[in-house]
Length: 215
Image 1 (cartoon, rainbow, N blue to C red):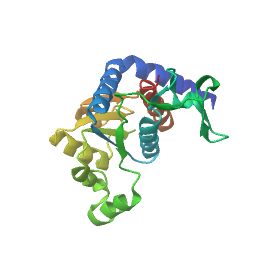
Image 2: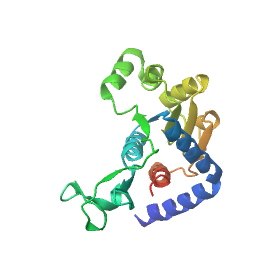
Image 3: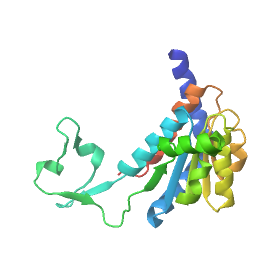
């Protein structure tokens, strides 16, 4: 365990130092996507599929910044009581809360969450089509692709389609970035050859992104 933690801390530091500009570009594109109501799609395989699903849930739900009718700003995660399953008002008062004016919710879909359509494409057209095959029907404005190796065929075919259809592509990789490094318009690489470390850093990066929209 100590070895993994040591490697993880190094990878986190290296990723931050080597990808600061790319991270800023990532966040800036999400700021625009939220303001303009653009659709974001996210994809991944295996552990990256779980990371994709997790990020989609966090970005859609946990970025809702709220105001109380008494005028106090608050964030949902500071006032949610998971034991009583209720939302309480600020300072113990009886006022209500609401999403701040002018702040749209994020529109995001995780393409590996629909097992029926994924298995249909895999069975009928091949596993390399499970993501690309879904893109024409939803027409996303941004595609986030997570791949530890950066070389998964179904990720690359989806990114290739996206680049050819004016979709802004963001890639998260490990190792040397694989083919995805040269295909994604915004690329964040975790300089590690350990899949566990790579996946942990991807999760940390994406939690950081969500945190940029929580206030």
